[in-house]
Image (tube, rainbow, N blue to C red; front, side, top):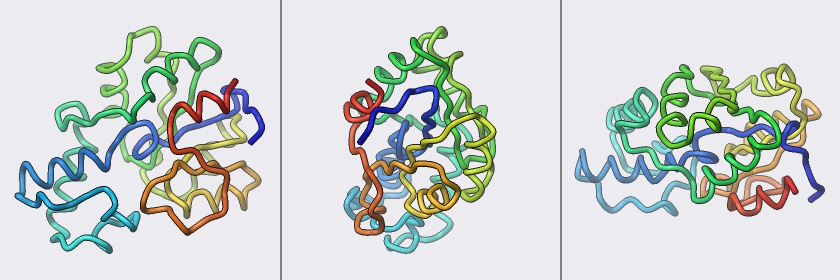
Length: 190
């Protein structure tokens, strides 16, 4: 992969910056007694399609994570905080999420990062999984890291370079350039 200037690269939040799957699995166990779910079991982006869980439980757990990420104990992906801090020293960073509200993401960033880092990260909440190309273009980005294969196909169609963050739910569904760690993202931006 060729080097990408961080000013031209955007990031999805859940599954890329934040380890939402770990939090989902942990909360299913702690709050509902479903303690046998493993990351490898989540083979579909819509978890209810691959896990034997009541849709109400899935909705309740994700609602908790989306509404109050700090209180839900959402953790960063390994290395994400450090690499984002490095990137913000060069340029402001843009996170574009399908979440409906930016404030839980902003609160999470503020809780985990020094203020001088957090304030250099723009958070855009779209409220839907589709239409990311429009938001990416509005922010002057031409490359984007996402964990949802369907989003990456939309980006490619719009002429935006998709980079998939490898997760069990996107394996075997694409031929895009991919990264699986924030160390690889750091190397992309050098």
